[in-house]
Image (tube, rainbow, N blue to C red; front, side):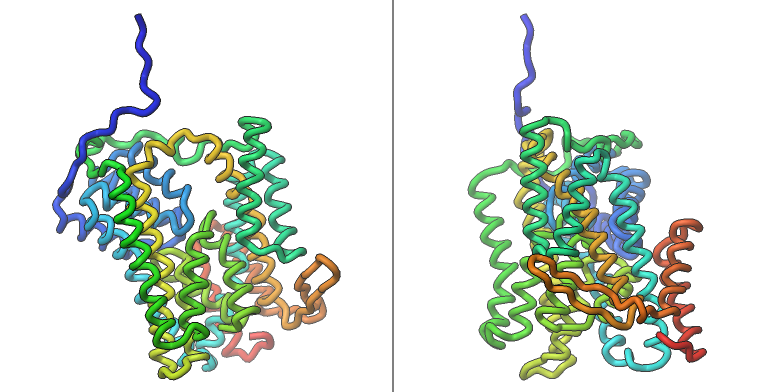
Length: 466
């Protein structure tokens, strides 16, 4: 007589309390937070080294399982992974501390840099530094397209997803959330028609097991999923998410820049599949062209600042909010307005990450192996290549050319550069940055430093186009 494994293994007993001493965990997360440069890959590598390889608090398989779940969610996956692992090690307070410390240095650094940019951005030195950073961002985005394409476009069908996404955004101005939704639907539909066609292979789960953890998987913190727990977390999370926005709406009006930013960035927080680059074209378009919170040049410089500070790249929305509120402060002092809007935007961007993890973590095992969901996400990932390419085009047009013109003809809505208005100095810096990234394989932070120095030299020399 043979026996078969159940479809779902029996849930383990609930584990509460600290798996590792809480004060040690706090010190570890603080150390990690100061090293979160280099985008999500670098941030995940830092956590891998600290938590899996050195401290051995969590095993490789469990770490990757948590990462795979975070990859399913909108928002910065590296911060969500920190929340998840913090929850596994120290329960609710562990998740809250890990997620908060992960973004705190970046929040402080970018807030200070935003103030410097507003206060001193028109001086020769600061202008020249930013003039060097902006072209480098074009090369950085091209590198992001190359990397994501190498991982995501394993079949010509997925290449078609990327091309269609790019054309939808760059030529026909289809809204970003619509592109994401259609890509997910197309991935799911293709899986139903031809199973296996759009399923991803390899990925994070293909990595080695790594060193044996000191802490057994059986003693890591977990909760039993239940309707009561879900309802409680959902109610508290939604209240924490939207009460600050409601307070700003009450005291500053529903049409104020603070309310607009609170609602807009709450929306972007739930559509940031595929990383920050994927949603930044949408943010740039709306913030620059619709709300007029800042200029296209400001947006590029803000991205350069976010690239050079610790924490998730999506932190650039804090810079957007600061400039938008500083220029439209209402009844508040402009500096107070900038800080208030910056903190509100940071809040509504990252609070959903805590909600998604704490709400969904008990159900993670039930999501494993869901091929239809995997196919939908693979469709999104492929489309993200086209989305990031559109972001690169947007930045290149507004950085390397001094004049652009709009094309509106039926369904076509495009922004094209004036080829006679090319800016030679930014173009040269962009080419140098590309050579350093692709040929010399320098880190992004190092390339940004060199590019800023080149911009400073060109500015002090009085070269045109700086």
